[in-house]
Picture 1: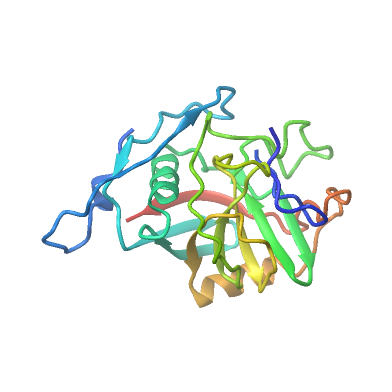
Picture 2: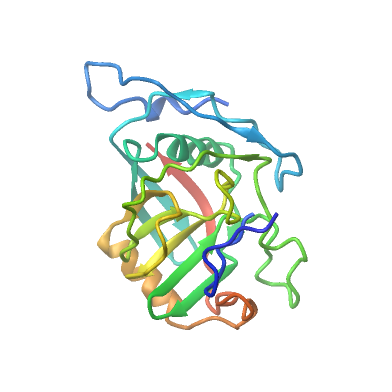
Length: 230
């Protein structure tokens, strides 16, 4: 199951318990729990446990993505996308993203993105694994969209297959104000310094490997070494 972005541009293809650090920060009142409808699909790119069925995450959740281009500091929006943030946090805690590289990059004006989170991709291989673009954690997560989503530079959004509730582990980092339709869950934002790191890395362009649907493999690899949430 490949994940996609949108037709005519790179289709953004896709396709345990949370750490106690993720508990509501400094609030005396316990946040209301949100039930998340995970759907198991099998064929996980890496073996992981399902996230907890409910999450009490709320508000802004800090995270640091240590990568080959430097530390990317992000704020995850658990009010807007509690299930997406819960899933990402669970996968990060289990090491799902460690030593994975972003496999797709779009540099067209209005559609500037870096798609990440597929363990099948090997940036050192001359030929991409046929499974590249399909890697998922063995479950899908519910969409958290209301039709008002926009994708300015610095946005973190989930990739999907073009069908409802088909996101999994793949996500994309928007590094230029982009015109994607409001079909992709927005769940966080990079800070200004981190966005500049991404812009510097993506300035080298891509190899056109995904030319039929848009974009290609990044000319400057971006590899996740570790992710800390909370």
